[in-house]
Length: 72
Image 1 (cartoon, rainbow, N blue to C red):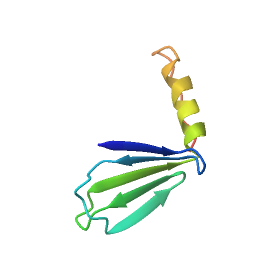
Image 2: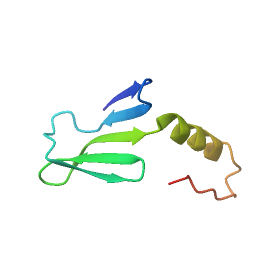
Image 3: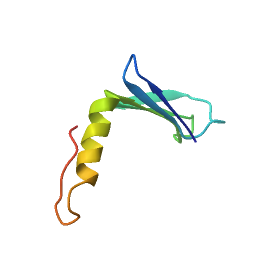
């Protein structure tokens, strides 16, 4: 697994399967999932990554009994 952050574009890229050949991609809100021909995840791109990571940190700092949803 390889993780890269593009500060200028504010995109976090997580290469899940380096040997995978990307066939197509699907976007849901601020996440682009790049898939192989057999629909395995090869790469994740998180758009507006600083906002996403900030929300993630806030959630992880909450008491475990409290449920908090991340913004879509």
